[in-house]
Length: 344
Ligand code: ASP
Image (cartoon, rainbow, N blue to C red; front, side):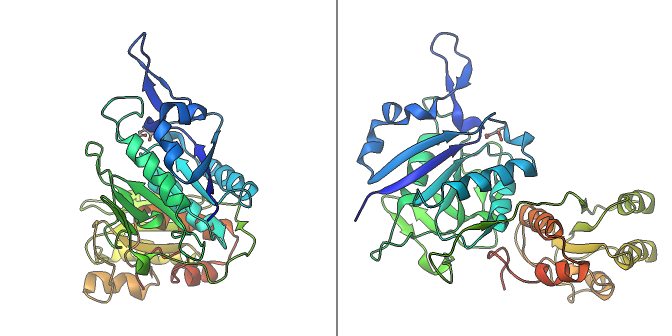
């Protein structure tokens, strides 16, 4: 089988730092010297090219324009490479990776996000293993020569996840990411054990990759807490050009039953604002029919986000509102799993 060719896109973040031998401070790592730094990479059956985005950024500064630029870069190089590895800061990696999963249509090649908790140039780094295994996964093909993981995924500390199911769970532990509601796509030990049944495969191969280039910022994220006042809620819901609200509720999608709370949301929905209900819990699913405190939301037309992460809910809403759909169409699309982002 011919060698796979992989394009590494370095966007910024901890993975791209090394300790300066002279000063001891952290300085950027030059990924174009990747083979000199990690000679063992030559043993992988892959050819590697590196592109560093300019400027490289701490992922806390990531904005939707960066996602569109990244998607455009992948589209421009789509036919030349068999797979893509995106090196990204961990802080917002799940947002970026979820966003890209929605921006791509007809994706049939691997796009693997990874990063690290310890800079790559520090002796005890987790970045080396994350990078090398992400490259191997991006280049992995089955007996028929097809990519094994042709979707947007996130690899971290021995586990490969569907990107839009992930959340950054720890600022300390090396296993920084988790997918609470969907199994890992691969577990990495001595071998890489792919969970073929969990991996999404395209309906057709060979279709041209299309990307969406507009993401809306006319949305807000409202996390419920006991004590949220009518005044504060109404002020958020009355933002002049608001079109969508991601509502983080309690447990199985529950919220206060107070008339002012339901009334404020009902008025927003009547004005055409789409309200999507996701849970604050890490695991589990919104089921508004279970309790009176969920039913109130269901009755006024709040849409269930099922077991979607906040990252997937926000970026899916940005993508659908950006497409310019009517609120009825946005609601219809929210109820469909577009990229495997919720459990059907
Ligand atoms: N602040 C860094 C970033 O997200 C943290 C990291 O990469 O782990 O860019």
